[in-house]
Image (cartoon, rainbow, N blue to C red; front, top):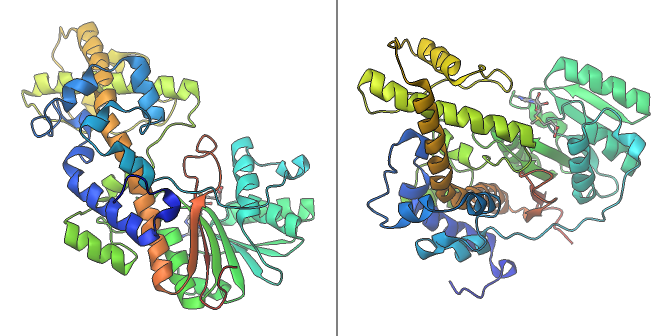
Length: 411
Ligand SMILES: C[S@@+](CC[C@H](N)C(=O)[O-])C[C@H]1O[C@@H](n2cnc3c(N)ncnc32)[C@H](O)[C@@H]1O
């Protein structure tokens, strides 16, 4: 594949084929989780790579976390420029308008900005019946209804969210009908028909998978921003498209739920204090890891349950005592807490650098997953546009798929 090809020249199939090859060929590099291993399992197979990562400055590490494809020292070992090109997608066209600020009442600031960016790209045509999929309180349904002066049906399975959504719609005079519906249940297809357009913002794994399957049966149009690919009943990823199944089988690539989680691991939007607490917790976890290996006399990683934000104990020692109790581990007296804590923070600095390899494959995996969805629809005769709907600072889950059924080709 020539280096001069731009993203416009690449078909969805070609992009998918090349991404499959690269993800399969380099799976020994991106799959291992560096915090689980004292030394990366790929160290010997990739001479020089570990050392190059470990000598990166803090500033270079932060820069590469944020922009993994720009001026990366990893290009000595990996096809950084090609990966960058394969994940480059156009911003989808949409007549961007600023919505009245009063419409944003009761919606979080970031969510409202996402709705403002998503809504003009829904691409609804006159006469279409509008449905919001997994709507929460129907914030987007209200904005869509007011913007298009149309009725919108919002599907959501939690009765409390439906009640609150209906109350907000009535109060704002928006023509929204909140409908209590488990979209995974039999019969969810009754809301879809060939004159329906579904809008789905951040519908998780199986929830958007179901939408795609039902849409191929009912022939509705859709505008979908998928997220949380790992929220799926299957422990091993089963591609939606025929090409996905064939290419996966031929390439020897197999993806677990844990692998899929990498596609959505990006903290670009986390506030500074949250990031600082994550760093603290990361250092403590790695300090505990060193300690438990010594106490148990077993040089192997021991998973410790996660803690909700704000629940982190007040000191490293308290954290280790909590973790030890959870794992049924008796800690001896006289442990050198400051030494283990300092070692944990040193290891966190190393792990952060080694994780830059995974960062490089995170967006390629996400684009690969969205392409699998795109190809599923194209194989069923849909016309599909794939691109972004906002900057990733607003939400890293900024990929959008706009699909029209065979009976209604795109203009
Ligand atoms: C990630 S939220 C997205 C909500 C909204 N679209 C947004 O962008 O804020 C997913 C929503 O799906 C709903 N949900 C989860 N499982 C569902 C199911 N089986 N059927 C219908 N809704 C479901 C959740 O209650 C939640 O409101």
